[in-house]
Picture 1 (cartoon, rainbow over the protein chains, first blue to last red):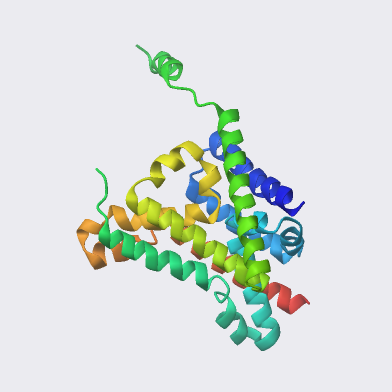
Picture 2: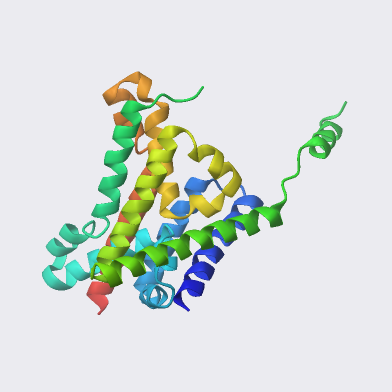
Length: 116
Length: 144
């Protein structure tokens, strides 16, 4: 059942994104920024944790998850250690994906030549 | 010829993209990535006994690695132009735009080329993500 939920959740988010992109003047950059903000807001109201439980990786793959884990890390840090914990933990759970993306982008950029 | 008439002729001859087909392809490809991701997470959880949050992190790393390497080989641009949002909205799109921004300017050198352009497209995602997460967490922490 969780496989069907994962398929539907991720598919619906991508489908809605494509409809927005086709019918407005927004670029993919705008769309991704809006989705990150939406993810943080959903996490703020406690909806995203429920979504992760129902859909599993279907909710974890889209970029909305980036906003969710940023908020979650920041909030848990604030509960432990106040403002110090917030600033220390805000990037803690995203760090894995973000560092991999930066390091690989650098390595790939050094060894490749752009097509003209 | 007046500008409006010219615009009409342009609109007539422009190739109309099928919006329903685009949305359907995005839905199917996005759903497929979610489904395969769930298979990967289930395998990690049941065979390697990892906690769930680590499984999601490794899934993110896997997607980022695949899309970065394929972007470097020049294959990913063609796949994205067919799949559209099905690959832009998952984490693959994030890695793709970061890698291609770095790649496009690598002729200008390490600092002015790669260094100052690597966050050109993804910078907005990181900026607004961190800013909104900071203020929302502060708000929720103070209220609760």
